[in-house]
Length: 214
Image (spheres, rainbow, N blue to C red):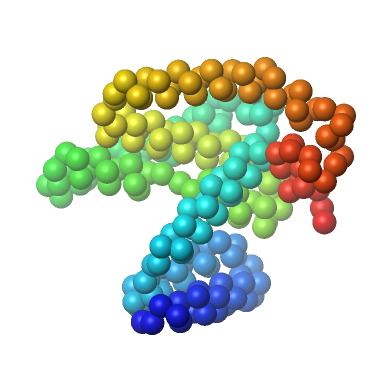
């Protein structure tokens, strides 16, 4: 397939996904994933710019999803959200690992990778579905978002524990990250709550213009 035709085909698939989503009442993110999988198996190749946009979009959606998490609700129902998130990671991970390692006779590394890959979830997709179905503002929607966040944290921890080889730079990264998080929690309000910045077009408060209706 010619590289020049790839943007046109992707644009048409995105447009078709929107039409199918409106007709069936299913989240457009799910339709786009399905059509993307079909197109990929039919020979539609991935270019570097496509991978860049996909990764950048995933980062943005994950950030927006993080701003939608109700911290107070997560604290109040931490036990429920933690159990849902932890079990949604551990149960598929254990099931896939046991099957691939003991029944399918995969090696240990391959079985662990399969377990992690098939037990994770997409916070970005969950966020998109909840927003499109108007569930992001409900209590159950916020609980699902918090549980999904826990699931993603489980995936990140599993990958870090199982496959990362710690070095001195790892320790430096952890220490610096902890310091930044503590300082951000203590002093970020001086920026976000500054009366000179609030209600301005350039206001840096996360998620402000996402939450307000257009």
